[in-house]
Length: 111
Image 1 (tube, rainbow, N blue to C red):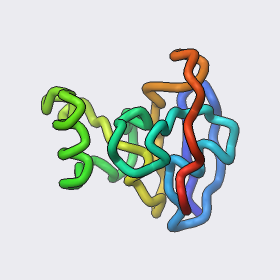
Image 2 (image 1 turned 180 degrees about the vertical axis):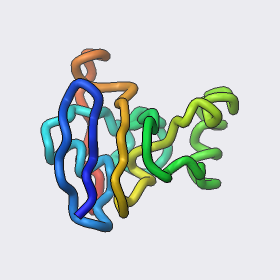
Image 3 (image 1 turned 135 degrees about the horizontal axis):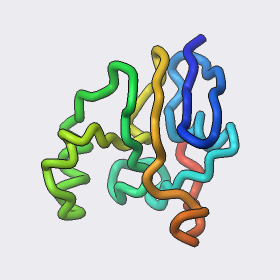
């Protein structure tokens, strides 16, 4: 099984095929997902620090564009954790969490 490493949080094993946003939530990382994991709000952004997960999907590009997030952020290795299916090791840094925003996480994304 692959490992997810989260800066300042630790490393945990995740079954192949699990959405990253759910893996984070299930392992105590309070990442935001205000739209419920539907690639609309961009609050579940993570910075990819290691791992082959840099290809931004059209759905993510549209979400970033709708939220007026500059395209240069793709070059900064930002992805939406609700759109990543874990298949191999990955190291990330969550951008928006309950702790650093003071917001509720949002509804649990579907599997």
